[in-house]
Length: 317
Image 1 (cartoon, rainbow, N blue to C red):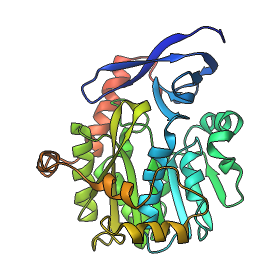
Image 2 (cartoon, rainbow, N blue to C red; image 1 turned 135 degrees about the vertical axis):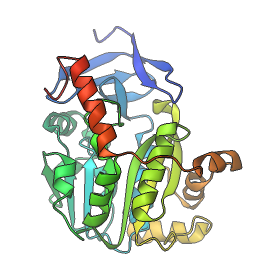
Image 3 (cartoon, rainbow, N blue to C red; image 1 turned 60 degrees about the vertical axis):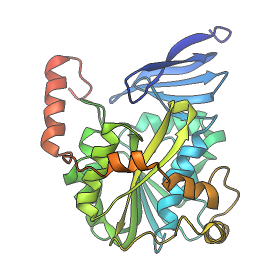
Image 4 (cartoon, one colour; image 1 turned 90 degrees about the vertical axis):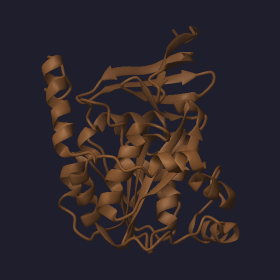
């Protein structure tokens, strides 16, 4: 098996086209309570964590995704003492959060214990042992249930969940009802970000407008991730919305803030790439700013019921 190169599904792009990548070794493949988990090695992408057939972490370029996901909201937060990461059981977003000198406590919430166990064992060269940090508390529970119990508690909330695939385990974590819980859990001066699927997809646009209706405004970001075969999108909110606290146009201030707040070198994010993450063409901006219907619990629950009825071996049975 270790000498065999196999083609496996990589991911779907925004047009639902499949891309393939070569696998030189399969380290682990199993079905957890919640999803299919695979750990593979690829000649192109290195060590990869794959959930339900989609790459979540690739050694080749995960840092582009995680540095954008983590540092953008934390650099725009007034304080960084208490942070929550919802999802992110691989520990790579956590690795970036722990680079901040003023972070005292991080709650990492992942429903799937096996993702964390496998990541602790196999992904240490990527996550740098972050899952064992004394500043971290790991909670194996539903992120929605966990965050609903917090009020004005976190300085920043980072959402690093699997995509809201119809019938999947994360669909109820992209609704307007859920984002209201997130807003309530943030302290005044706090920041929030969610991964939001492919930047030019209709799904991204709906997440953008759902967040906007809760936070009063929402900030779109994107970064190209080759292992995802897409320009990947993120949506950020601030509480209260008074504009970005770190201007993308001020390259020197961005570099200064990173130097002051972050331990170690960042591989991707600096003043110029920070600006690039906020930039979009007039065509993209025009399409994004056309209002669309927000995502609701009712819509997500309906997809869960339909999936369960269609598949007797459905994941949450």
